[in-house]
Image (cartoon, rainbow, N blue to C red; front, side, top):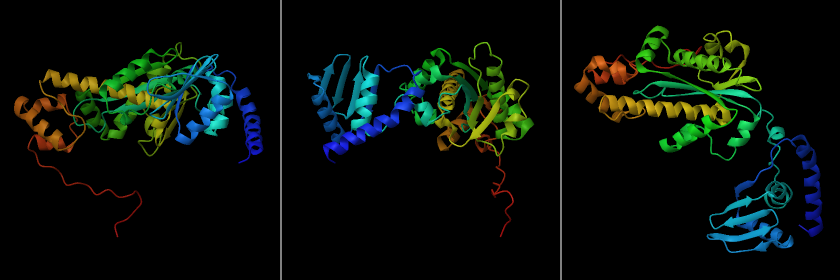
Length: 351
């Protein structure tokens, strides 16, 4: 590409970006920005800094570091780029994106994804697939200021975070974020087993928990500003009516959205973290009460601990720490298991 072609491309890029930036002038300028660069992009960036008379200095573990007025640019051996200072926003929008990254994102997420900054409620659960411990359902209200505060904090679906310590740290960050309103409904094992015996369905119990969370948040309208436009959860049932039937008046005043991979929404991801944090803490407390480390999930290791628990405390105590509709409960008590039902798609017939 010739110098003239590069200049024309940059001009077109900037012209296209102008209306987007004007539409998003309310976004608070960044003071720090990080991303990964390829070797080719790093070389281009170095040339950009040279052309703009940046002063270079030595920084530990950095390939190069440039400084000019209000902006510090450091590219590390790991491939990570860090831009800091009052000039960060301007540098990223007018230098890094058009000349190095060749893409425009910073500052106009609301245009690229209009729903990103909308006030909303995210709902998620933890413990549904775990034999030991409660089922915990959490809800999180977010607005534009909350979303902006979380952009670089690492808030994401809890299933993608393996460290309980990291979950705990993120849960604290979420709860401490100004403007964020949260609630957690832990369904203890004895209550869970009663609900399941009555409702005969895990999804119905889960829907009940989702409904309670939504009702709790909608009951805090004095703290929710602006009001949420919808409540989002993962699609765990064939129809959202499963949740709607469990809602009372407050919950019915908001649009309910169920979608696959809802945890990709930041509000739902935050709810998943709070639910997981509550589950982990309550599981640990149960284990401490019975002087036994209770494993997560379900499988051969869980079967072994379940049998050990029954041997030490008797079968009558199992309902205090476990979900009794799991086949694990029968195996732990030495009871026969019913034959497994073959699943078939509704409406299909056996050949």
